[in-house]
Image (cartoon, rainbow, N blue to C red; front, side, top):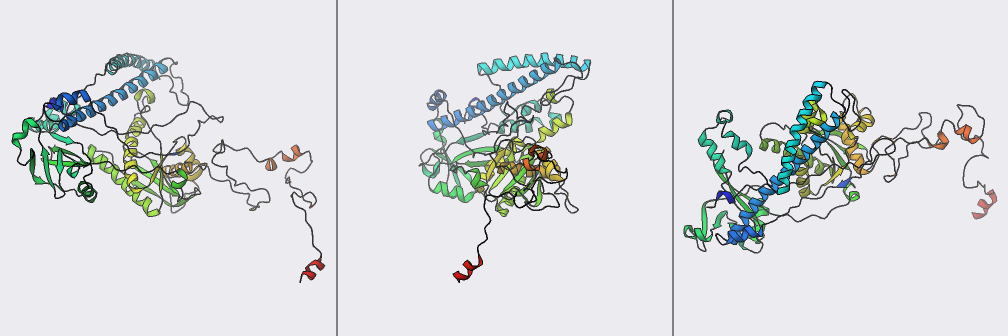
Amino acid sequence: MFDDSDILLSHCHRTKLRMRWPPGRAESGLRAIDPPFVAPGPCGVAVRWAARKRELTGESSARWAGAITKATHDQWALARRCQHAHVRSLEAGVKTIEHRLSLPIAQKGTEGAPGGYRSRQEWFAKSRRLGVLRVRLERERADFASGLVHVVRGGKKLARNRHHLDEAQLTEGEWREQWQARRWFLQADGESGKRYGNETIRATPDGRVSIRLPAPLAHLANAPHGRYVLAARVRFAHRGTEWLDRVEADRAVAYRIHLDAARGRWYLTASWQTPTRPAVTIRAALAEGVIGVDTNADHLAAWRLDRHGNPIGAPRRFGYDLTGSTGRRDAQVRRALTRLLHWAETCGVRAIAVEDLDFAQDKTRERHGRRKRFRQLISNLPTGRLRVRLNSMADRTGIAIIAVDPAYTSKWGARHWQEPLTSKTRKTTRHDAAGIAIGRRAQGHPIRRRTAPPPAHRSDEQGHRTVQARPAAPGREGTRRPATDHAHDACRRAGSVRRTRETSASRTVRDARGAGRWVQDPLMDAVQER
């Protein structure tokens, strides 16, 4: 029906959160902790090329010209984003190699910066790799500056399988079917006010699908007004009631018809925009407590906390297996997030705290060298896929997603919470303790636990030692100075000579501290009042 050169696959635009790393560091040597924030809901952007649309309108129609230009622009925008990410990766690799080559051999690295290479052979090999990366970087920068992108319709992997059919376990006919299936699709945006929400591809409430043919193909119509009605009927099992309400109210619904070559079936995908929910404040979201979630390569470690930051019940673990095809990996992530959200709804919690992770710049081999297992661990963490899925799924349930700074959550959680919460019947892991640290940071509490009073004095006689700093107090997660009245040199600074093991509090009533004055009323006043 259309020229293949004008039709490309349309990919979804996914927004990613970035980990904020302020340039300054705290006075204690640790970097400053960013405040938590509520992750915004999903949003979308649509852009069209007016010049190309006007050229195609004369040959087809305005609606089909808009659908074609939108599909090609989405593919170009995806390739443009991938090109920008590739340039950033090459720049990071070149910078890291240049830094490590400038250091003496076998010099140890510092916090946040790798050291020199281990041997002269490795130094020489990396110097040659530096030249290769510089050539690639110059080429990619030139393409990015000129706006040139390289797009393979159907994907690079499918194109390479044509030359390796035996390894791909495909025949030439099977490969050709997959190659053509990537191009056989029709899509059109919806229009509010039009009948059933879409004039180009229309689906009625009873499941009948019809297509508005362009002028050159009007002679193929089998229905009035230049429409072609498909013989098969469609049914939406998921969100069918919501779709039916929209089409009956003539609200905009976008459709896409595509072929699945593996199953030999045609599918109709319906999509529409949902109303944006008003952003809730952190205080309102944390009113019923929070669930802290630690993201790992094969599971989510979650623990429920009350509004005071105390863990409630037992930790929960939601596992997933990120091996196999893309569809299987995506299904594993959806299943784990669905179980997490159902548990949050059962507990009555309206907020889930996650780490604002992004390993885009930290999983190159130039940064971590021979630590292959560590690089694989970072690469297997589904940070981007999990954030997008969790934010989209939680928006429908009314649960707020709070992103927190990931600095030191695993280290401090294991130090302050793993051992106290481990018992004979429950073994607390490092990941479970990290979930508590994430939840407490979202609530504004320090990660470390309260210091218990002395065993001999469980009252305020010596001053209460479990006082927490306010959330806005600077340095509340650092090491506190001892109180003046409880310091080991309080007696010497007070100018009195007392025994070392003696407390600084006075033993006489006259010297007792107090702002009021003790007075005993006479007994006659009480008798007269009767």
